[in-house]
Amino acid sequence: MSQTIPPSHYDLLDEPVVVMLATVMPDGQPQVTPVWCDRHENQIWVNSAAGRQKDRNMRHNDRVTVAILDPQNPYRYLEVRGRVVEIVEGQPAFDHIHKLAHDYFGRPFTFNSPDEQRVIYKIEPVHVNAGG
Image 1: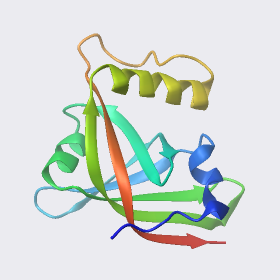
Image 2: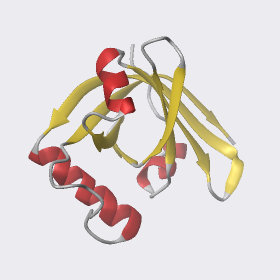
Image 3: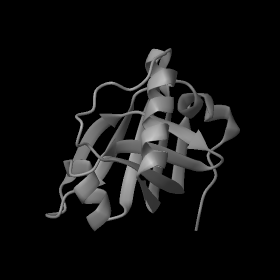
């Protein structure tokens, strides 16, 4: 059953804050990576390149956690435990990474290699903890 992200903490997802994404390795160990994300209604969208460890992990096991500390107040935070409910590849994923790059740096995304395939992971909250 889905849980709602509280509006009091939307800013942590709507502003360009680097978040920590935890995925599950095939052996059950957690794997944590800093990522860019944004919020679409009650979903968190994360963008990455196909073939990276987090991509392989989320395709194998849809359970993830996104943890965010407020850069202005480290006692204010948002933890969203959820599931990847949709994976989007192709042009929509490239459009999304360019939007994120604009949000975070004010310019188009230029860090990819020519053969890189971008992916959006749409995360639906299952459990939400909001502090501060």
